[in-house]
Length: 167
Image (cartoon, rainbow, N blue to C red; front, side):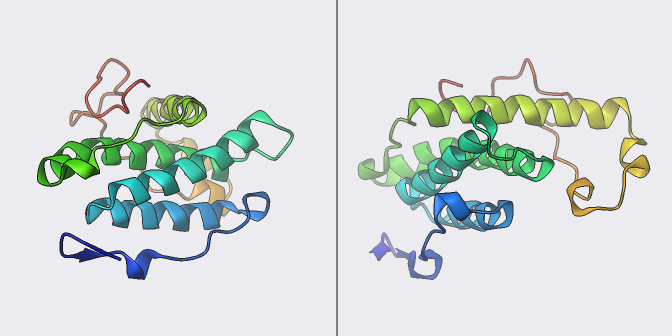
């Protein structure tokens, strides 16, 4: 519906069953979450991001396959969750009802683990820039580089700006 002149109708859609969700399905949901965040549908964005985080956690913590594709999805969960956290104060100033809800503890744990994956990926990319050239040409190895975390190409390990609260 409409909120403050924005409309989320184009971003509504059925969610795939968690048991049948593929990495591609999860990326589509995260894309919807980020679009909703951009137009200040903060709670809806947080719900979708949490939904994908719970699937990542299931793959990471059970006998379900944890692949490089799921690792990338997890990293994007961290990025989207962080941008939701950064957008929420601005949205809440416009409308107090948009104050961000507390993330569930298992979701916060998945976001924390995804941040570690992101930092490791950036660190590995800078420590061995030729590594990707030596890998096979499968889709798992063809991912765009992550942007600098703190603006100066450090691994961000000691930089707390932009982190999800409690992570």
